Length: 119
Image (cartoon, rainbow, N blue to C red; front, side, top):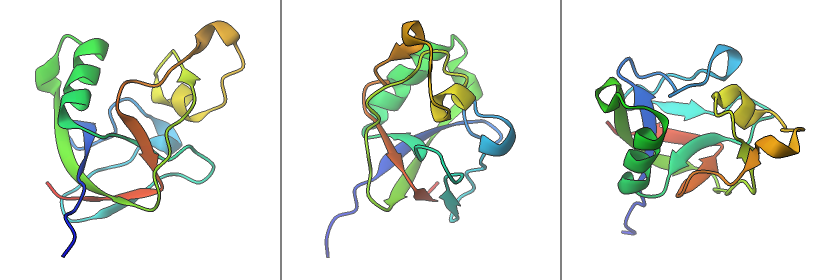
């Protein structure tokens, strides 16, 4: 049997997406499938747990307000070429038209159409 390649999702303590709001907010509940909203780049996860930890540390001083959940990807992953630097995740998903805000995605970022939440 092939080994599963786990990925890592950053959520709030209440199992919500890290920073996405409105139509982009997803809940990551154990033993459920979560799918990206239509027309987006996909669900942002990290290839390695250490990349998820580094992302939290770079975005906030309050590490205790977040969880890192182990997920199994659904579909084929893709790495965005760039994201909008505002990283209110609404801007992550929407096209960025202001060149000064375009940046590389955080290290280890990969997007999937969906994930299965393991914990």
